[in-house]
Length: 354
Image (tube, rainbow, N blue to C red):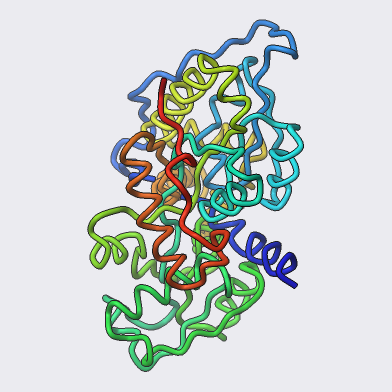
């Protein structure tokens, strides 16, 4: 039963992944490229010298998109975070993106044989409405809110926010099993208030002309947890690989940081690469209006900026990574200690540059 609970929890956090300073796209310059893409090695690199990396479709993989074009890296892309467990523990990959709580669980499960290199996704949860007005969490009092992720990260985050805002007994939470089911219920008029992660916020926006993104739960988290940002995704590596390949680890961190900067500063160009590499379906970047020509192109550019901005893609390492992760783990521990392996992780979870 414990093993089943672990697997279900990981499945439920899959699309949340994920984890980082909000992206800074601007609607007024969506067609401009202001930062050059990081240089990638395109010549052949022997497979034995390639760093094997696993990425998850969605926000946690989006920040790595430029690394997909670099032959120093060999990628495995998955839509199922539970696959990360076997890939990293069997040594099939050296480095992997994963949900934040999964990193703590793997650290405990492997006896400390993984290390966290950085946080790569901050909060991606949003309150969205269809036909009602919500300006603050207080406006949810007496309302029914639909969401997914029961027993996993979304539930812990939402319950923490409601409790610290004095609303824990005033808001009715109804959990559904699938994000697509929730989007469909909103489209049919059966749901007026929902909590969704990106990229499903953008998917819903393409289907619902009157949908409003009412609240960013990352901002709400910061109001009641001022010491650290809400984080949902991170990058881990096998400790053995880290010990034997310190230069490769440092290069990966530098390359990942450069890729994240490229995505955030060049959202339109990055969106095309994200779709072409299968990291996110084109549907997340679609627009609901019946447009054509220049108006359609502009609408798509603006949508690309919105999607990438709301995915909160970053790469946070060092002391800030440790402080942010520990603050989030404390919330998980207080809610359900089994969600992070039964105890707060030791400092040896975190990678320190040599």
